[in-house]
Image 1 (spheres, rainbow, N blue to C red):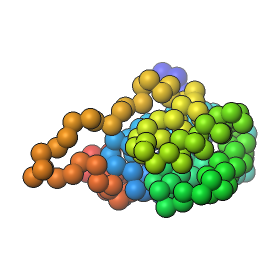
Image 2 (image 1 turned 45 degrees about the horizontal axis):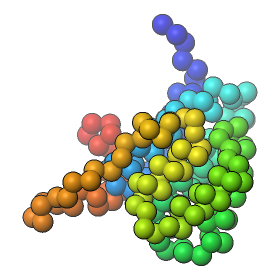
Image 3 (image 1 turned 180 degrees about the vertical axis):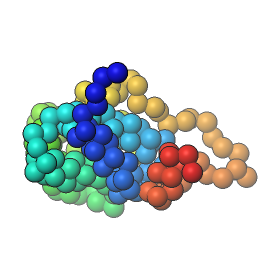
Length: 173
């Protein structure tokens, strides 16, 4: 059995404990982000030099992942392009610290347009963000939101759940 890098496991735990990352996302969106984030966490954890490096990278990883969730869920509250530019700049800074995904100026422009396109669903925007920050999860394997419409008397499956509820559900509670 291959030995598991202790930092990789530690970083996976950071993802699972980061409820702010999925605040406001529905179950499908949250699961896509969590799955992608767990792979990223393993990559980042595998490149940690020591405990001090781990502490620095954990903070930036947490802020990086929470930033993705906030860009998706708060984009309707902030239609101004400056908000998106500021958030993407913060993502670049955290991405540099974790030695993780970076994106080109062209990708930043495309993401800014997608984030500001309020005709796109949160899942469509999330897919574009995760694809841009790949290769942790190719866009083709990120689940898409169901297209079926629920009967009018059925509970709305797209309602956001609290971060704690999503994580306890993921853990089987």
